[in-house]
Figure (tube, rainbow, N blue to C red):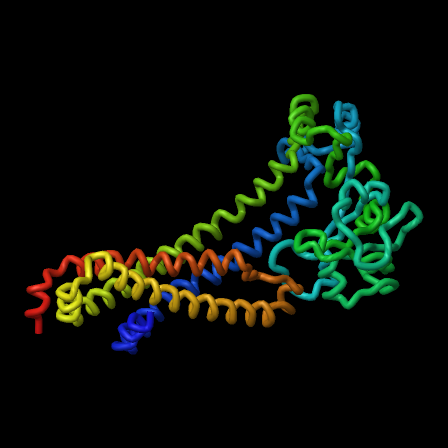
Length: 376
């Protein structure tokens, strides 16, 4: 191994520039991968939150297909439906501290009796949930509390009305972190909506009932609605990640082109410069596999070192950006570097070095020892 390291150190500048070429591609892959990992965490949290509820929406945006009280009655008659939950809300715009990456801060109006059905997987960091006696009360998400400096007993103002904070949800890394949960009827009055208005609708299946089966049954039996099962809801969110995965793949291709060509160029030049040395080794009994192994190890080390530098630089950059942009993004995190991402990117850099070193290693092993010894 020391001999291989000495070989790499023979041309320090050239080896360093080759590693830098790989590091740039790995840096891009790390940054884009960290953004993709953050979205994956959000989706994972959303999947847990929506593990039972079925989302109901109109079949079209026409007035004739709008959700009404009659629609709610039809839903309740479907076999397997335990509860039909209606919600109202709006942006928490009058108290928002800035832009938010992902879901904005918003009011979520719901009948307190249905909170266990919808937020059953969310725990409280402090305080309690809403109950039927609450009027001007709210339970806020982790980020809403942090952004506005709220604690139990604090006041949150929305639409010129004050709500007392009675509970703070634990961090979920998904949508509830941006919620201010308020009583449904109170939100309806603040929005000045008539009792006949139906906002968002979700269905809670009976215990033991398959949400997929219940959703399919609703689609068959209730006209002018579309029921999305928890799996379908999560799949739609996952589709939003496609563009980021494509960009990440683009970064990987860039790394392969730039870094791979640099490694090939460096290794070919190394073979040309060490032709006589290779001839001596083969004359002393070194077989082709020994030569191939030596050059592949050199190429792998170039990829590995370049990968480590690229990952470290990417981690530093996304950490700084997360800290700098936290205030303007409402406390949201944009990039998330995970152990899985580090292993993936490091493995990619190592594989890139090995792949780029195959041809130079093969060319070195195929040298005729007599001709190699005659080389200047």
